[in-house]
Amino acid sequence: MKLKKRLVYGAVVLAWIIATVYMLTITVVSTDIVNGTCIPYASTRMATLSIFLLIYLFPVILMVFCYSRIVYSLNRKVTATSA
Image 1: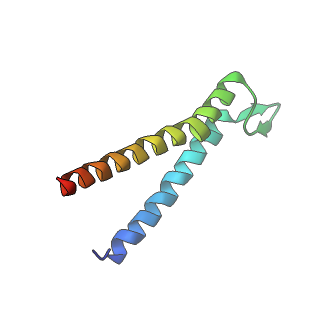
Image 2: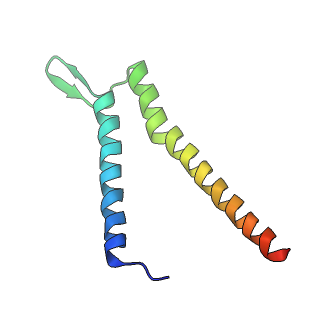
Protein backbone atom coordinates (compact mmCIF):
# COMPACT_ATOMS: atom_id res chain seq x y z
CA MET A 1 0.00 0.00 0.00
CA LYS A 2 1.43 3.33 -1.03
CA LEU A 3 0.94 6.27 1.33
CA LYS A 4 -0.20 9.55 -0.09
CA LYS A 5 2.14 12.50 0.35
CA ARG A 6 -0.61 14.48 2.05
CA LEU A 7 -0.99 11.78 4.71
CA VAL A 8 2.75 11.69 5.40
CA TYR A 9 3.00 15.48 5.63
CA GLY A 10 -0.04 15.57 7.89
CA ALA A 11 1.55 13.01 10.22
CA VAL A 12 4.78 15.03 10.39
CA VAL A 13 2.92 18.27 11.14
CA LEU A 14 0.76 16.56 13.75
CA ALA A 15 3.83 15.07 15.45
CA TRP A 16 5.46 18.52 15.65
CA ILE A 17 2.31 20.13 17.04
CA ILE A 18 1.78 17.40 19.66
CA ALA A 19 5.43 17.52 20.76
CA THR A 20 5.34 21.32 21.07
CA VAL A 21 2.14 21.33 23.10
CA TYR A 22 3.47 18.50 25.27
CA MET A 23 6.70 20.33 26.16
CA LEU A 24 4.94 23.68 26.61
CA THR A 25 2.58 22.03 29.09
CA ILE A 26 5.52 20.75 31.13
CA THR A 27 7.27 24.12 31.03
CA VAL A 28 4.21 26.19 31.95
CA VAL A 29 3.17 23.88 34.80
CA SER A 30 6.63 23.79 36.35
CA THR A 31 7.74 27.41 35.85
CA ASP A 32 7.85 29.71 38.86
CA ILE A 33 8.40 33.47 39.05
CA VAL A 34 10.44 34.64 42.04
CA ASN A 35 11.19 38.36 42.47
CA GLY A 36 10.55 38.97 38.77
CA THR A 37 12.86 36.18 37.67
CA CYS A 38 11.43 33.26 35.71
CA ILE A 39 12.67 29.89 37.02
CA PRO A 40 11.84 27.05 34.62
CA TYR A 41 11.40 23.57 36.07
CA ALA A 42 11.16 24.89 39.63
CA SER A 43 11.82 22.23 42.21
CA THR A 44 8.56 22.38 44.11
CA ARG A 45 6.88 19.11 44.94
CA MET A 46 4.06 19.72 42.45
CA ALA A 47 6.46 20.65 39.65
CA THR A 48 8.66 17.63 40.30
CA LEU A 49 5.68 15.30 40.25
CA SER A 50 4.26 16.81 37.06
CA ILE A 51 7.63 16.64 35.30
CA PHE A 52 8.02 12.99 36.31
CA LEU A 53 4.52 12.12 35.12
CA LEU A 54 4.69 14.02 31.85
CA ILE A 55 8.26 13.28 30.79
CA TYR A 56 8.74 9.74 32.07
CA LEU A 57 5.67 7.86 33.21
CA PHE A 58 3.14 8.86 30.53
CA PRO A 59 5.39 7.97 27.56
CA VAL A 60 6.39 4.65 29.13
CA ILE A 61 2.76 3.68 29.76
CA LEU A 62 1.84 4.72 26.21
CA MET A 63 4.68 2.68 24.68
CA VAL A 64 3.82 -0.41 26.75
CA PHE A 65 0.18 -0.13 25.72
CA CYS A 66 0.98 0.34 22.02
CA TYR A 67 3.52 -2.48 21.85
CA SER A 68 1.23 -4.85 23.73
CA ARG A 69 -1.53 -4.13 21.18
CA ILE A 70 0.91 -4.79 18.33
CA VAL A 71 1.99 -8.11 19.86
CA TYR A 72 -1.64 -9.08 20.49
CA SER A 73 -2.57 -8.24 16.89
CA LEU A 74 0.38 -10.19 15.45
CA ASN A 75 -0.35 -13.15 17.69
CA ARG A 76 -3.96 -13.19 16.51
CA LYS A 77 -2.89 -13.13 12.86
CA VAL A 78 -0.38 -15.95 13.35
CA THR A 79 -3.01 -18.05 15.14
CA ALA A 80 -5.57 -17.40 12.39
CA THR A 81 -3.18 -18.31 9.55
CA SER A 82 -1.88 -21.47 11.21
CA ALA A 83 -5.35 -22.86 11.93
